[in-house]
Structures are given as C-alpha cells and as structure tokens.
Length: 441
Image (cartoon, rainbow, N blue to C red):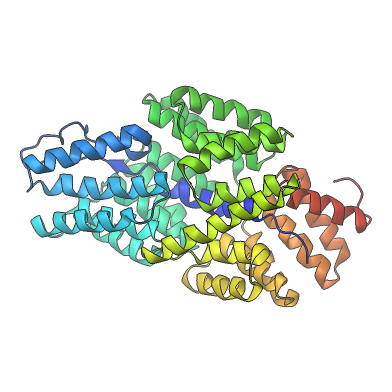
C-alpha cells in the first residue's frame, strides 16, 4: 500500500479551518455602553493568545461577577472559550462556551453577539450547517456584525459552497473590512487557485496591521501560503516576522518548524514541533511530529504521536465535535482501513469540500477501491487549489488504476509545487516516480 502524506493532509484540512475560523472578534459593550473590564471592544481573539487570552477570560469573569446581567459580555466570554479551546487543543471548553452563550440569550433573546457566538461554537464542532444558520440569524439582527460575517464565510467554505463563499467574502469586505475578513477573502481566492490575489490581499492586510496579534496572525498566514507553494525561504521570513510580533504564537512556531523540515533541518523542526504539541496537542502538529520521527527511523516515538491523535479524536467526539476527517486520514495509514472509509463517507455526507474529497479518495484507495477513489481524487484537485498532498494522492491512485502517464504527471506536479510537503510522502512520491520511469520532477 502506498504511503500517505498524512501529516500534510491533516495539516491542510486544519489550515483551512484555522484560516476561516481564526481571528474571531472578541469585544462588545455592557448595558451601560461600557466595554467589559480589562477587555477592549473589538479585540481580535487571534490577538489574545496564550496568557493574553487567559487574562482576557479572567477579566470577563471578574466583570460578570460584578455585572451578571451584561448579556454582551456573556456572549464575548462564550466566544473567548471557543478560542481558548482551539489554542489549548481542549474541546471540553466548548461546553463552557455553550453555558455562557445560553446565559447571554436568556438575558437578551435573539441578541446578535450570542447568535454569532453560537455560530462560532458550531463551526468549531464541525457542524457547519448550524454555523451557517446561526451566522445568518445573527446577520438578520445586525448586518454589520464582523463575527457573523466571518463565520458565514467559514461555514460556506467548509460546506464546499465555494461560489457562495466568494460572494459572502465580497459582501463581508464591503461591510466590515479588516483582518478577519481579509484573511478569509484571501483563502477563498486560494481555494480557486488564485495564489497571486491571496498573497496580495494578505500583504495589504499585513501593511495595515498594527496590533501585535494581527501582525502575528497575518504574517503566519503568509508563511503558510508560501510553504504550500514550496517557497521555504519566504515562509521562514514571514514566520519569523510573526514571532517578532508575538514570540509565543503557536501557529507561527508550527509554520517555522514545517519550513525548517522542508529545508532539511530535521533536528530544529522536531524541537519546534515538540514545543507546539506541548502547547497545542492538535492532530496536525501531532502527525507532523510523528512523520518526522518516522522519517528518522524512530518508530516508537512516531507511534506515540499517532496514539495521541486517537486520544484527541476521542476527547473531541465526547464534546460534540465531529472528527471524522481526522479519523479518516489517521486510520487510512495508521489504523483500520475500514474505519477510515466509514469516517470519510460520514464526513463527505456532511460537507463536500476539496479536503473531504481528498480524504474519501484516499480512504477508498487504501481499501483497494481505486476506480471509485480516482473520481474523488480528481474532484479534490478540480478547483485549482494548489496542494501537493492532493496531487500526491491522485498520482498514487492513478498508478493503482494503471494510468502510468497520469501518475507521472501528478507526482511530478506535487514535487515541483512543494518538494518538502512531507518527509514520508515526498520521499514515497520520488521513489514511485523513479519506479515509473518519470525521472526527476
């Protein structure tokens, strides 16, 4: 069975969600028109990471002890818990978010801040239909709500409704231009293969960013974009800029580690990813670290990382998250192929994106159903989204169906685009291409 670029595939899926779910706005006013104590209005949650986010949550709790009927601050607290869950990799915090948002809606039924918060919780749980419904409800109350405008784009992207997402991004840009909207606008363009526009929008956003959190967020997005295009020097430059703005910003640390690994700096990449998973034990970095260990022949350590992914999946499911995409990708190479296929089919039934098409195609492949798999692998690459892992999967599936010429084209394209997309998958692609007589990419 062909080896999968599991690390990269999950990372791409995670990145899709991170770019669309990031930079949620934390802010609002109490009933007297005052901003919550210690938390200025309209502070991006991406700018309140680590201790700053924790201090913001503590300040909100203190404020709500003094002002327990402040429905807006209850909504803000609920959304802050969503971000805290993401940064800690702890889905259990979604229940705290539910309680805070329920309290806000008890105090002021139908308030747009709480509805937007519910949209954010639903998106975090991968329930994108509910996320879209709540975002639309919030926008019916307040058409200019940045949080709801952003989450509506999130949901449409994750449901695979890319044309509608593009229209929603245009509308959001008209109503509430700013970092949260710009990053979503850029990602929608990238999904369609328009990397030039995506980069230009992010560069403009970075030029206009002043808060350290905004600088770190946008610079990291540029670093991730550069990495996907195989531009590792630029990726490192952007990640370092992000870390100058916020030395503890975990996505920038992860981005830097991936770029270092792609350039052959395995030792530094392992050290960087260890720091990342200590802070944020999510599937993407766990699998990235596991693959680096595997590439170095440290099988036991690799298996430990893969088991931690299983533990995260169980925790996520217990707290209302649908982790079938992660389950499908992890099980395809490190578990039960039948489980992988069931999970991939379940996720495809919920949302038809390029990422779920890729996961289903790969799950079908590892179950020996390559004729079916090819249809989904082609769909994953149909929008123009430039992702080496998708091309690698397609090439391996094409090889399995006997289409050697197509396999060579896809594998060459993967390695030309991002030759370090995975320490395991890229090596497999090179070996397979050589075996097919494809020569150098």
